[in-house]
Length: 225
Image (cartoon, rainbow, N blue to C red; front, side):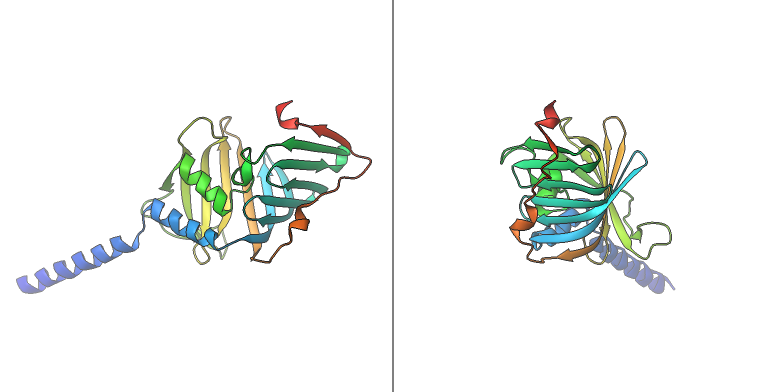
């Protein structure tokens, strides 16, 4: 009997050790996600942005390292384009084009497209990374959803970051970020949902060129006015 109990204890010890090895630290898991995005040089996806009860929907195009475009269906015909040095926002309701020169070292693709290799590098530098739950376990993205995700919580290291906290929901199967939620200093929550992602589509650079309607009024340096 003593020998049997001893063997059971040994087996349990080995199984617990093996289980512990399978559970990656938050930093290790984040590194795996970064490795996944290192394989992606462009993608398109449906995007849903939620803030203060307002919903925006559209189609997002991203091309590494710094090209981004969102064509919105809600609000209809609104456009956001970033070419690495200039951010352009077209608001059809006011026939207004907002432009901001950022320079190659300005906002950068990392600030505009967090769901990218560059965005992940920025987050690793400027945020501490932890599991939302310990021990980590996959859970449904939303109640009743078939999509299973792991969740990480990032906390800023310095006050210069716009989001004090970021929560990332990463697909268990694809290691793609399906939801990013950020909380501002004012505790305002902004959520970004990505779905129907198509990877490495050889999106042409011309997709990120935008000619505003001739009737639109142009406002420069809108971020600083």
